[in-house]
Length: 110
Length: 150
Image 1: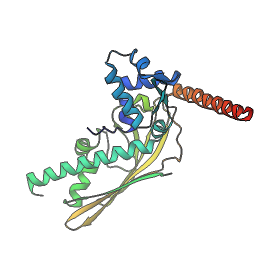
Image 2: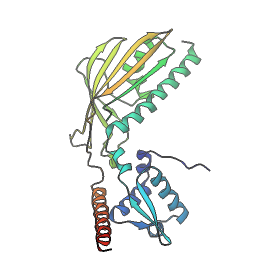
Image 3: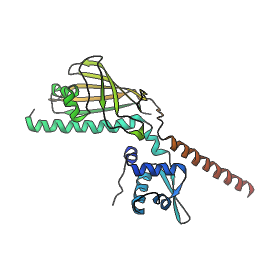
Image 4: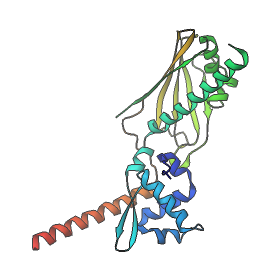
């Protein structure tokens, strides 16, 4: 299965992921330690961690037999720019306008 | 660093129809956002969208109609921020319509973005970074120390 890719805004849209980032802002943590703070299974936590890693919010390093999660700045940089938010916003809106006008064409022929 | 957003879309509709979708609030709402827009120069209006507290955005976009050239050009200011009258985004949205191949080419230019806008996103995170950077420094120092003593 190919891994789902989320952009920075989709990453922080989820409350659990926001809380994970908040916990990691205090210190690096193992995935197990992180999972103790949540009512979800370890694989579910691990899935969130992988999504955040892919989006540049955290890095994972193997130390001994444990996997440690550490915050990375890259993901947050994207959030600090309005232009990144509105770039996605306009693609979204213009695509919607396009489909509305296409439907109108089908219905009325003009 | 990019300071503007530009997109061109082609629609198989006359500029009259595309213009309506850019200037009639009930049609704008269908694809853009609800607003109290009026096609009057200098008119102040607002768009409302979902707030994103984690992004320091209250969901309100404050606008003023700047330029109207019927069926050809429309521009308005586009400002927003975390609320309480604080503006962290002060930009301009400009629409240009050109008749083309029995349709309309619509050009969007959203410009005026600051090169670096330092939104106070997650002050907590900043603390986290400082700690991590500090740790890295410690590790480097230790490594240098070890090498020096080797």
